[in-house]
Length: 177
Image (cartoon, rainbow, N blue to C red; front, side):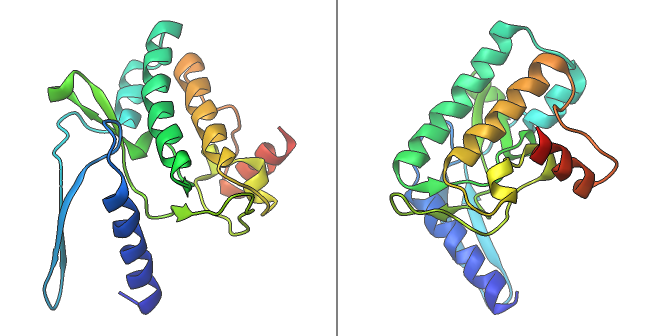
């Protein structure tokens, strides 16, 4: 890892180690040797929400509400702690089939701890789920709520609200929308 990648990794581990919520992947321990880091987390047998959406297609309002409720519980929790995820998407939500299909937010690699009334200015996220404010480089934790709204739209319609031939085209549609 480069020094910057090393720092980003350490930041992600620090954030994840402070989170304790049923809808966030639990970090148990981190070990390292001269060549590698070893991360011990809870095991989620069920795959990504993305794969379930791809299989099922469209969800009923009741099913979508159950999914979004779990995601929003986690988002509310880490927002209360001053953490902004900045990459909420179905690929970053695991399903724990052994815990009654409990959803777990993962991948805090783009996350940041934010102060009250602080605006963030670096662009992070995935084009389909990125908030317009992030593209304008003046945003706060509400960017995560936008991403959850996009997930809800996809659950109910089976397709993303903004589309395009590449990331740049999608981002242009997000700015217009």
